[in-house]
Amino acid sequence: MKRSWLTISAHIAGWLFFFSLVAGFVNGTGQDAWPGMLFSKSFLGFSLLYLLLFYLNTFVLIPFIYLRGKYILYALVSVGLLAAIMYFKPFDKLMTINRNERADMPGPPPGQMPAPPPPQWENKPGPQMPSRNEPPQNRRPGKTDIVSTILFLAVWSLGLAICIIRQWRITEKKMLQAEADRANAELSFLKAQINPHFLFNTLNNIYSLAVTGSEHTALSVMKLSNIMRYLTDDVRADFVWLEDELDFLRDYIDLQKLRLGANTEVRLITAGEVAGKRIVPLILVAFVENVFKYGVSKQQASVITISIEVKDNRLFFHTDNPLFPDKKEQVSTGIGIENTRQRLQHLYQHQYTLSVGEQNGRFVVDLELPVPGSLA
Image: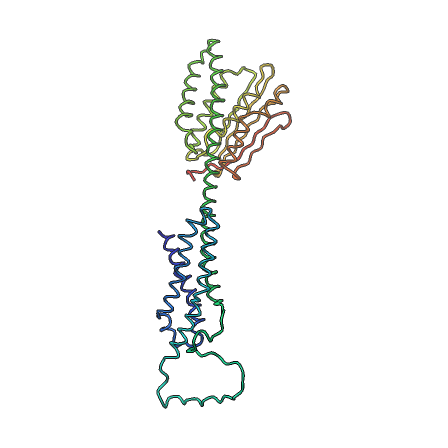
């Protein structure tokens, strides 16, 4: 509603400015004739003509002819209306009527203003100015009403420009919506890739525990139940509570620790106030999964570090694991890390920093991203 009132106000202001310029040009220096001319039938008819031309072009010809690709028909109609304006010469007629009305106005009462002496004309041959009462056939033929033509082109071009800009904005809005839909579809696809990949590895771990008759099998099933509940109920939202995400990661890490031997030490460090913070779901699990996939060896001892710190509405995530020679080529091509990188770009854009690489024979991930206290 507010936008509609602004549009109407802009139209009214534009037309008042337009017609004030025309009225000033027609009236010239005769300021006393302004009120009568503004409300005269001739000026109102002239104004109505150009109003009709503008809105005919804006709301009829452009939407139903030009924007539907009928460019030749639109050009023919435009040229036809221009020819009609040039033939009927509305501005010249307005000037003529205004001069006639001002000439017919009664002069000042006798005695108030001395009558000027009659002009003395020399009887010399030369060109004579046609009288306003002279028959039309004796006037100069072929005179072009330049002002009417310019006014028509200005009004016509303005209507065309407004409609083209409006159409361009609509097209741009549709393109942005299409881009957003594409990003959402891609994001959903990336989430679908992460979840089955994680569940596949977890089920393999529980299967191994069951085959060996481990006493931790029941606990593993419970942990997996918590994880499944989180995956099916909570991660559908764009943002989840950071506390829930950390509980999910703890269950996941506990499942991974059940299958590890004594050679592997897992250090999980959490610091900072996590209550009331929000984060994109499943944005950290790929890096944690990568730690257990490539940082564990049955023959060599290893220390795995996972650190999560919250400070000033920013989350600082760090993983550090040994990089064994036989797994160097595999770690750089993990689909989980690449998908997570794309999700970060889609959801956080330029608000995050991610560093992934090898440092002194260890694979290190450092991630910093905002964890706001609301959905904003």
